Length: 511
Image (cartoon, rainbow, N blue to C red; front, side):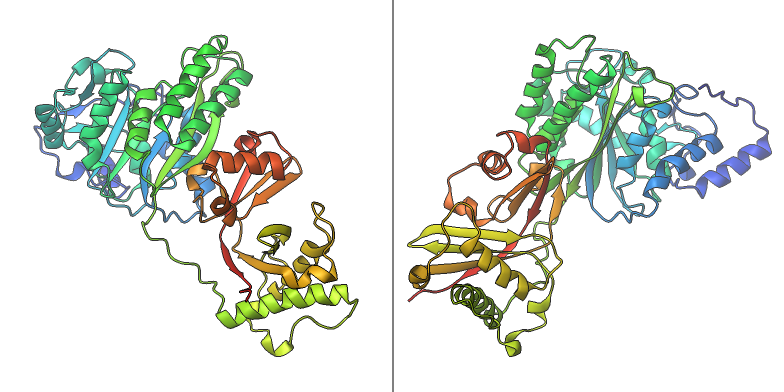
């Protein structure tokens, strides 16, 4: 698809255009003085439309899928593609749509790879006051750009790195469309893949990586393998980013390279920018990485399947240090009632009695709530049975009754409980919060949360307390759960659906 730039506009139309831009998500251009230098668009008409109406229609279509989503999370960074909009625009929009429209940032750091020159560091565009776009001129914080260059030799201004570079330019219309107030930008092009230099650049930028600023990382992924090979390579690379570890990301790039995939030129053209972001975030427990969407150029009606380019979208969400506690709690009286229900249900089964295992006057409204639970039996400190139910479809007191009997008589790992040993058995109950699907194990609070793994009709779980009973790492915990509980391979969790949950855990106090 080809778009033509309109070069001559009557004066009155210019005035109308300016007025409309001021009311359309654009605050940057209103105070521009006549001597301001504006960087011209380098890829307008080829990567994206030249006309405001055309680009707005495209944005309307991209963001329509997210119209009912109320974005509330505090986005620290996004990783978005920078290809022509007809190939990657929908993927980029999936990330930008997560940014609340009323977000107010001091700066937007635009960071991407150099496609034209090699640099022993990075180039910051300190030459231009504004970047031109079809939606108006985006302001550059020229003073901050100059200060970074002045204070740090890792930064320079290299005109050739910016003149024809598209990777930052194509992000601006998305930001202008999405945000009510467009913060000034800091355009940075990284021209090296040297990890020590990238880490120095990240260290310099670290003071700016806070809730006052947004980082936009521009990168496409696999270049030029076949459609099927691209999906395989990009899945590995995407998973490494989700895990949030810089070493794993770099190792994955090397692994992809060593696989000698036909026509694979790179796994991520913006690998340096991604590495910089991972360096900033890998030790931050309050950062949650979300993978949003993957496509490649072969998914577009304009792209073939032979030599494709891959596109991922990620958000890096800044969570509050202290999460709000769950509103679901149990009083000591309610815990005692549930433990009595569990023991009485086992005793009634042994005695073949039909007596209710719960006094009706002890059934509070909380005990009638529908939630999941596990009942675990111990004898002489050793596991004697454990069965649970996840779905929120049955009142809690009934779940405890049924799961206690199942743990005592239906756990296939053990013989049924005998009447003579009941007095020696200690009962533990775990009342579960609703399952929460996660996209990355970075979201799994190991030691506090349990894990539920599901794939191909197979599933398995470990309760939170299993972490306290073993010396496993998080990966070993997942491996054992996948292999020993879900019947998958040791690494089966890596491409399975993962869910976490919390538990209110309590047990009988034996005299």
